[in-house]
Length: 574
Image 1 (cartoon, rainbow, N blue to C red):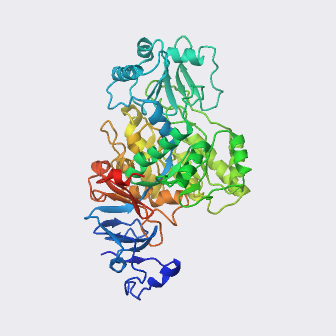
Image 2 (cartoon, one colour; image 1 turned 90 degrees about the horizontal axis):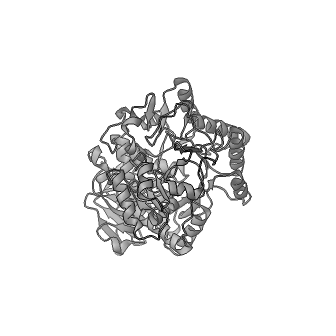
Image 3 (cartoon, rainbow, N blue to C red; image 1 turned 120 degrees about the vertical axis):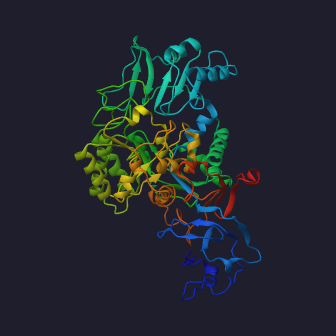
């Protein structure tokens, strides 16, 4: 039986219409003439603290005013939408994404994803087709995905002797051919990255660089005019987020992208809410940011400042900072002495986090490896001593992806996460790409969500998409991975780490809201909160776990307005 919920806060003249009886039910129809929108005949998965299920929701302006008992809110001007039994959830929140990177990939790369491409020969054929439209000697940049098959260096050199070629497994790993190495001057005389840093270069027998891992080289920049890039950002937010039920994106991009978001907001053309998280690559960037006096929370419900983001190490399998050596994540080599590296030392990291804390910023650190995570926790604890903040909500991005079974260190690290109230930010969509080699790696728990939640932690859900898995911007893709634990190779990875569908939904709703200081206005369907919803074609709570990602998004509602309607997509495009 559903429990009626009503708005208890005042909205000026509306407050007089919200008189409740002792039983909590409405006495009369609202004097102001009713709600603007009422959604009826739905399975409303509220994600409220009691996980209540309701059948209807009323919206006035851009706020929810009633859940469950909405009859009194239907007035002569009220728009009523019959959802015909479909599931209504809070609008999804992506707690970690890279919209600008995805816009660049969509505009400037050749799609070489495998699958659907079968092998290296199919990738070369795709590149050959793209080459026909380019000037002689032009760069060819292919965008793939993690761990996928690639042509060999010899195959690339034979196919493209005169065209520099760059093929990306991700933003962290790039395969180049001989022509590209010559253009970039990456011969045997090019120095290796400093010892202890995140970067790694793999070379052939002649000493020429073949694979670049987490190391900045001067790839030629592709022109991206301001107006064109702004439109590309809008398209990505609309097509890959809003149309997939995402109403809020916590984005990691550049200052230029954030200026474009402001333009789009002012034009009424920003498809979703955006939380902007400044990317700090060098200490001087943080210094410049702090001199502005700005801090986390500046902005409005549409566009706001989030956390400062620091990348401390690389990715699992190649460049993450770990205590024990690991398998190469791209499946090419095993380096028994590779324990990764960090972008700054412990003292520098601590200085930056202390300064950010003192200035009122939330902090999120990319730390994939266990050694980097311990460094991060040390720095967070030092910051709390120097500038105590009881509700800092500091985050470790990618925590829990790879829990090494090193009892002394791992158990202590987990206890510190709980005691320090650090938020683990998880991107479980990456489980999909784990290979047989990866999952045979001894002494590692992959995407250990069950373990984190059982400890009382609330992992926030994000897709961390820079174009490597464009299909994964649909949160239902991640929800399926969290519940079913299935890979693209048909394997089930450590099913004991599976979580429930409701827990997986919380990762992309209320827990993502908490990770971004948004839970007072977003993340659940409750009176007083912003009217952001996603309508699903099937009930995720009863759908077979291996079919969750196939559930269609029927409608996305933001601020009480239908922004996407699968039945009429052209009439709702923003």
